[in-house]
Image (tube, rainbow over the protein chains, first blue to last red):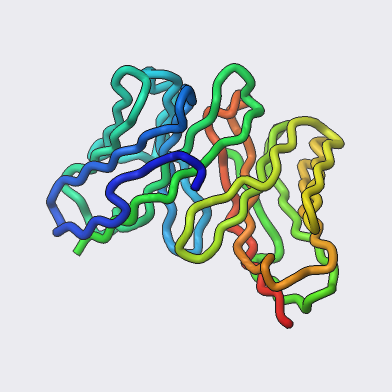
Length: 115
Length: 112
């Protein structure tokens, strides 16, 4: 357990429904990332926050995806109008700021199945 | 666009043997990360390499970085079954760790 907490761990939803995932970072980690991983592939970058500011966002990210990090603590990732292709594991990762060479710690992930 | 290629993608090796996993990337970067992932689990950080020539070792694993060749290696010494997992390298494509680009992973199976 790295200390990065993600909820829910598993979510099954019907196509067209909205889902929201939450990430609670390690205390005082001001850098927060969201990645998506499908079976047999490496994680794919979605977005990056430094404190409450969203500083990077993948060009591949559909406008159905939105992420927030109010107050620079926990973060949420919402997927609207889910599609079967959204089925994946959604990973949150955090790191301490200041030195960009710090270790980036991943949470246990949130599995999404869209039926 | 940064491309990160790992090889081999699949590796079966016997206990006690040595082997190397390679990670090539297509654009300049001097920060590279290695992670381990067990089936159904998240990613465990193994190494962070921050400069050309960096070498880090932990137990039976040793990682190195050659930024001029755009190559990192993960060397396994005297493999044991517990090392069976998928290993990923990830390259910092932003220069400030804002975005990592991962390889496809190397699935390692250590046979008794």
